[in-house]
Image (cartoon, rainbow, N blue to C red; front, side, top):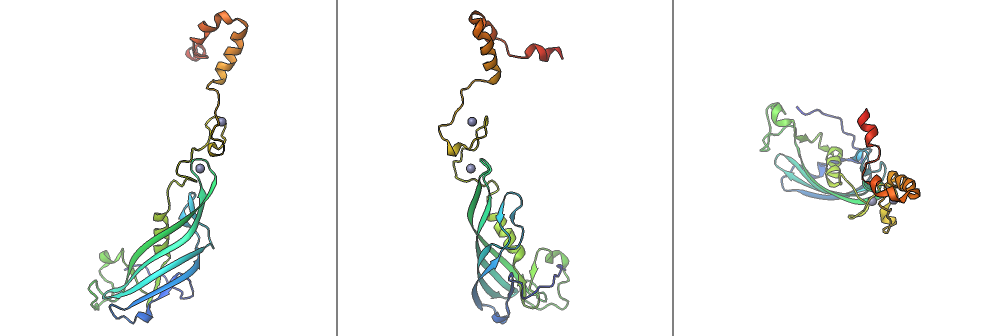
Length: 213
Ligand SMILES: [Zn+2]
Ligand SMILES: [Zn+2]
């Protein structure tokens, strides 16, 4: 039997299906704007901040075994670009569809003698509780699926300079002379005795030192 949490009808993510009157084929459409619950997103990557508005559009359809809920959630997520670490905002639109079954009906809608006793079948099913259903877990799964695991500020974000850390999108012509600091030091040394320069450039700096260890 699925664990029952008591649903509070005052919770904006709890919906009432009584209007459908348990008549298969009956349809109800509704929209609701709610405050985002906490942890609506991918932790540490991107998500809808707690309390930000989430627009919900729902279609409730009465079917034999319960109520089929189809909907869309729209909100603005916040995170940071994985390449350049700039904060970013992203409009997220998440679609979902979920079946909420009558606890006393089997999957053909027949009323069972003993409610919800076939535990294997019921584990993944969601149930109406006194005609109410809680959308929060469905909304959370849908939003997580709709969000990018690797958000970027722009599709071709060039990221950060590996040498100095500057954001390359702000400075497209940015470059460093391809001279290693160790070479610069060597060249400085070689500057006084320019004849030896070619000889020295053949050897990796620090190689002898490493071999001794
Ligand atoms: Zn970026
Ligand atoms: Zn740089």
